[in-house]
Image 1 (spheres, rainbow, N blue to C red):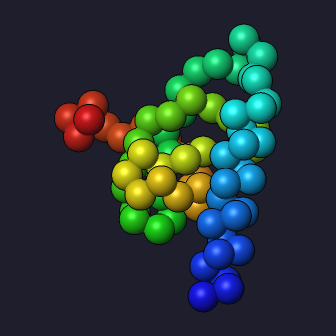
Image 2: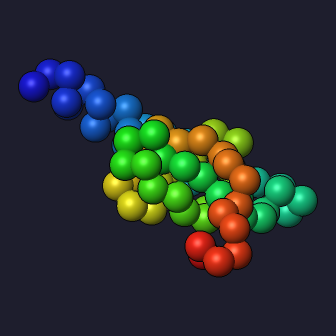
Length: 72
């Protein structure tokens, strides 16, 4: 139970840091990410701190190449 509370606090802290850190205009573009938790792909704005999965809301993600056009 304590681990779950710590994880939620860490996620909230990460979200606040991302919201507080404005990316320069040269880096305001979208990238594709793969979620390591739900294995879903989504397109999100690049951020130096982290990327949030639009499927499960996890920050456990990595950037990947865009999927082929016929799968989008």
